[in-house]
Length: 265
Image (cartoon, rainbow, N blue to C red; front, side, top):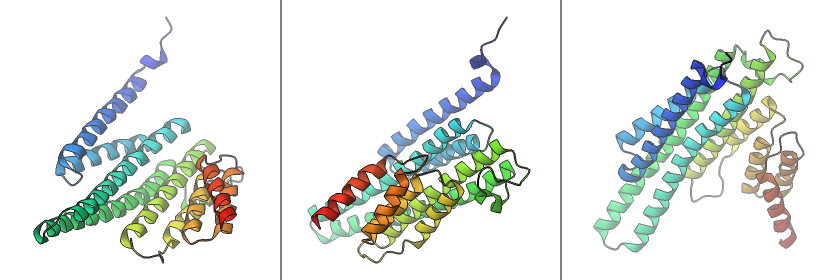
């Protein structure tokens, strides 16, 4: 009698794990809104969900499945970033509305606490992705220098499929690290124009070397170019982000905005 693959123990276990992660995430977002980002329960739930995603990424799945899980892992981080930003904006609005030295002092202290926590979160998240790259290389048996080999020209004993997964996931980790470095720089120096984007740029450039077919890091480099007012460099990276095997969808909108800016300048 034929068996249904979806009923196999392995598939059933995976579904259970994903269901548990989904439930934990629901609890996490509820905790954020009821107890706040800095509450111990919120932080423990965040660590639990992140560790669960990491375990799946470091197991044997298809590249398509790993892409979905990796994206969910980044969304977990980005939602936290968005919540920190909302609270920062909310603190700023409250400071403008409230009057009285005591009230202003309380608002400022609360703002300082959240800003410090935000910086810590960005730094810790970047360290997490850096460690994940090391774990991925160990899991797939890929030497560091082999990550930068062009596909089809690999002279290692690593299986091509394993190399493909490792390169894709490591390139995504580097893009995430670039974004985190970008946010961290904005957070460190919110009122100046001379930001140092070198760390973010280095991560994005490494990502392009590991996975040259991806338009994502090229788009992020275009974003950095707009920060320094170099429209030509931004245009170059936008076009590269689109004229590639895996074009980045947002690059088209960025390209249109660039043309509009040049047109009216």
